[in-house]
Amino acid sequence: MAFSASLSSPLGFHTHHPNPPAFSPKAPPKLTTTTTIRPITTTTFAIPPLSSATAPTFDGTTIAVIGGSSVAAFAAVLSLTDPERRRRIQAVEVGGDDKEVVREYFNNSGFQRWKKIYGETDDVNRVQKDIRLGHSKTVENAITMLTDDGSLRGVTVCDAGCGTGSLSIPLAKEGAIVTATDISAAMVAEAQKQAEEQILAGKDDLSPAPVMPKFEVKDLESLDGKYHTVVCLDVLIHYPQSKADGMIAHLASLAENRLILSFAPKTFYYDILKRIGELFPGPSKATRAYLHSEADVEKALQKVGWKINKKGLITTQFYFAKLVEAVPA
Image (cartoon, rainbow, N blue to C red):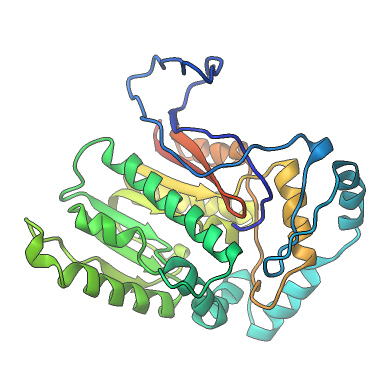
């Protein structure tokens, strides 16, 4: 989810309301719904009007400033490009579709790249460090969503697309019974290693002792079972909306009480930034990135009898994600 320039104004998490009251920066209005979500601080930047927007390139840390009057013209140029051609070649090379491209990427060069981003090493550039901050804020806010309703002790949670365990491990420390899965065997092995170091090593200091997460190599389509809560962070970016609808339905079928999703929001402004990034892919940008509108995600949830209960926006300079909690309608 690393496609933005200076992005949105700060947004705290809030309970979904069909007719939200007007926002006042000095005194936020009280919501009349039964659940109140405390504000969550995120690192954000104000969106400039399109007439004065700046847009970055996305190769390394070089930033090219494009005047707002150039954005519309540049959008026309983007419409003539064919970023899909490179991705089709990648799919042929690995002998599969989007899913096989993702699997291959995150088991090889992508694993090394994202292991650094998700980790604590200083061996990252400015853009990667910013993405690390954005992802960590998404994880932090997801945990807040989960713990706002009470203790997680004994609560079953499926972390679908667990990566290196950045969510699974803290959930286990909170007492949750975690099943963590990822399409990448390399990611799962790293998550297992991190969990052993962080949980088993400090088990004597925690009372009661946490249960180690159960890590498995699985793609989203292969997930089964029933869980109190299903969480899927920063994964839908790999699915076009046509497939995301089915995936959201599948994840909802596994959840008994709530489903937490994050996705890169689709707006005209973000879409243009994404297309600019596709012109400067760099050697490590090897998978498609799909944006999703909140309306499309909400519609997919409604089709299977779920509704959005809480939502928020996390943005940094090069990362943006919409985070939603859905519950049975």
